Image 1 (cartoon, rainbow, N blue to C red):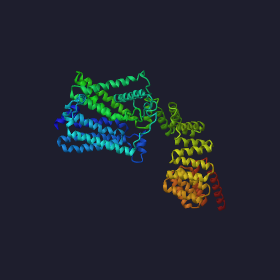
Image 2: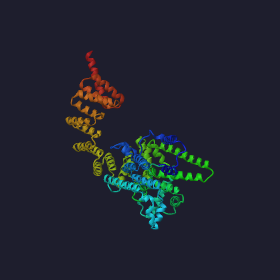
Image 3: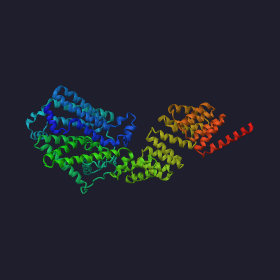
Image 4: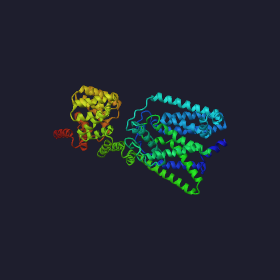
Length: 629
């Protein structure tokens, strides 16, 4: 045990501070780095992964769980070796626990497969003290003494490697059975280099992406939530100055690999090999070497490689301090880097507090990224700032003329601003570019309906439903079209389809009640209203519609109760008070009718129907007063 601890301390030097103080310092710095966003919103893809996750919010935060399981897996593996030095039989339990946690990391995130690989690297290089150069040389020379190498004759090591390999293969099989064996479908805007026809263009751009990732580790200043859609223009010739970056990357990597293999210092070889293993192996799934990935650069794939980077950086500064007399200068430089990176973490943490801050922070990093402009526009539109949103949507479409989602959202805003001709042109272009874009077909139908082009609108709605069978909002809008055309049965059927697909679709229920009420089918309207309130008991608009029906059916008490309940939920609705006043007027409760007419007119002085009814009530009250006199 003491020998193993000494070896590990040589590779990972112990802190100059006492353990308890070291933990406090690390914890405090971590808190300072990320404290600004602890109460921030769920932003960008967190909204889908957590807020809108119908299974369980925490399941959606796969990268966080994957990182947690990776950490626990690695700690379990370290525990296995310490237990093995005490009692060899105990290490198997910790190895199995490590495999289980690594498997969970694999299920959470694609990079999870690298967790087991990292455990293997740690096992072979740190514990087994494998000399990679010696193995390579003996293999090349077919040296018969290869079998005498201790690490290869270590039965415990081979057993652990077998467990890791079989465990990883088993979890991969389970993942493939759950998610299918087919690769996900990506588009050119997600990863432009992977769609390049020339192998040379693909290779040179992949390597440039590697250099960008390396730069983000060295200097994490250019950070962006999304790097697709023209953020990084393709390199198409060796004359592009950016080729220098990938040349620099490979010069550094080759130098490190040479030292890791050929250095005479065995400890240097081991730490460099371990650092390079932790740096490169976790990045392999994101490298485009084995399969196409759906991004250009993704900062999340650097979570695990950063461990190897920190090892190499620490080792480099340690070596530098040993070979220079200006140790204080080196220490100051290291502290300066730590301070700058801590400051950068604090700034970036603030960017993630809200979607507006996150999206706007990307404008200076990727001004050519259409998705950045789209998300800024969408955020502005959600806040009601349509004028500014239109500007960003137009820029997104200019940067990417085939960006159908930006066209769809821009078309929606233009529709609301009654700029129907341009809205129709945009939405027509969107469905021409992507014929199965159901939302754009529905919105096109809404615009065509507003332009009184009813046949075209019906066709658009039908096409939307063809591409998305379960589309309650489209059935609702189709029902509105049929109601405008006095096709009442078709309208009711469309709204019924909407409520079947989405039982809480309040607008569809309301329209059914109102249509049945207006056509004199009071009994059917009452039945639909009661059915709707059973499903959505706290919807005040449904209470109001059913109360109107019950009032016409002279069920005054029940109607009054629903009106009062609706008013309690939404006290500033002028129509609620006005219709309750009409009920009291019919019922003969004239003082209460007068009270609610007056409240309704205070809330909406322009309501002509309420003014007329209030006038009738006042004349009736005046006549009653004259008779009394």
